[in-house]
Length: 347
Image (cartoon, rainbow, N blue to C red; front, top):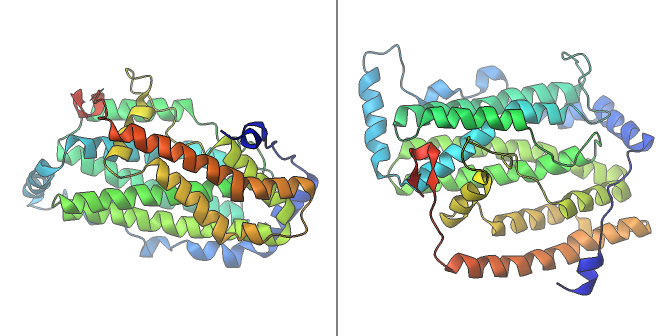
């Protein structure tokens, strides 16, 4: 690692009254017309039942048999990734808690009519369908140990997550912009793999969830884009800090009662089958830097210039070097391990 990279430390930005005022300004004058338009009315939203057998129909049992026939060709590795993705979606209570924490974006009454509060509740409601749909499909497939899956969900919600956001309103939309894009990539690639194995319904399910994630990413990244207009110095420092500490994946504290390194093992499988890999992390950084025109910023303070240099130069170079090492390791045969989710079979 070059000397200048090794020494570079990005400090966590201070939570200033100015930041809170800017966020409140967005809530009062910008969010309703620019953020809420990315929500869909409930009556126009898809629901999990649209993709699943109708339990009230006479052909319910036959439809379940059809699902079980389709999934026979899907490898265990794919089911490990599907379960990991589903468990991540099911930890939604943690994410809503995170979204309500930053100053200037809090839903203090639980029923606030402020646009940002409406967004957070409605975003949560839309996201809630993702875990419900994947959960039921996996249950009907008969390919996974649902009790172990359910334990993992309970452990993860109980463990929470540490994103480094705290109560800073600038850090929240940066994190969610990155994370929504990451989940869209993961679900989209999973849908592609399901299609290759002949399960067109599962492919449709994953693709539909990915489309939701892309729409949510658009909203969050637009919010960050507005902050780059209003306070470029403050938001570029926030961006650099989040990338310096690394974007914590929502399922990082995953545990099933047996495997203390469950998230690492799940991530290794996801990378090996081409669902989400280290290269995707780097690509997301590149996309956000381009989308927010970070390289074009001028008139920054010394701290802002250092932050700009970090996300546009230092960090990409460092990540590319790490990617080279990861590719070399990937060429070696990955050691398979048993997953309780698939009845302790190795994947």
